[in-house]
Length: 261
Image (cartoon, rainbow, N blue to C red):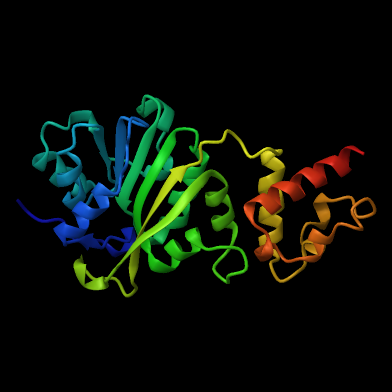
C-alpha cells in the first residue's frame, strides 16, 4: 500500500512510535460516559489501529486530506461512513453523532487553537479530549493564573474542562520531525452544569481582559462596566492574567449586577 505524503500546508507530522500511539489511546477513559470517539487527522492510522481494537466505543475517523482518506479507505474497508473526508472545523457534530463523545488525535499544529475552540463550541457533546499538541500550546491550556502562558484559551478550557498535561513527546518520533517538542493533554468535562453566571458576558469579559493584557481590567473591560458604580471594585485594578476562572465568574456577576442597578 502506497504511503501518504506528509503535507506542510496541512501541518502534518505523522507519529511513527507505536508505544506512544498506544499510550495516547489508553489515555481515553470512557467509563460509560460516551460510546463514540472521533479521531481527527488520522494520517496513516497509527492511532486508529489501537482505537479500532476497542469494543467499549465506536471509532470514527475524519481527515481533510484526500490522500489519507483514500489510504484509510483501503486499510479499513469495514469503516464505511465512519470514515469521513471533511474539515473537522466545519463538521456538524449533532448531525453526525448520537450524544456524548470524545475527540482524539495528533492534531495539526497550525490549527490547534481553532480545534480547541471548535470543541468548546460543542462542549455539551464532547465529554473528553485526548490530543497531541505543540508543547507550548499544551502548556498554555494547562497553565495557572499568574504565569506568562496563561491566557484566553487557558481560562475558557479550564472553565468547562479539567485540563491535565500527560506527557512530553520528542520530535524524533514523527515523520517529518517537527521543529518543536510536542505534548499530550487530556480534557475531561466538568460535571457541574454551567458556570453560575451569564456565560455570554463571561466570554466578553475574558476576551476583553486578555486582548489588552498589559492594561488593568478597569481599562481593558471599560466598555462593559459602569465605571461609577464599580469604582471600589479592587479586582478591576488587576490584570487579566491574575484572575482564576472563579475570579472571572465573580467579576462577571458583579458587572451584571451593576448593569441592572
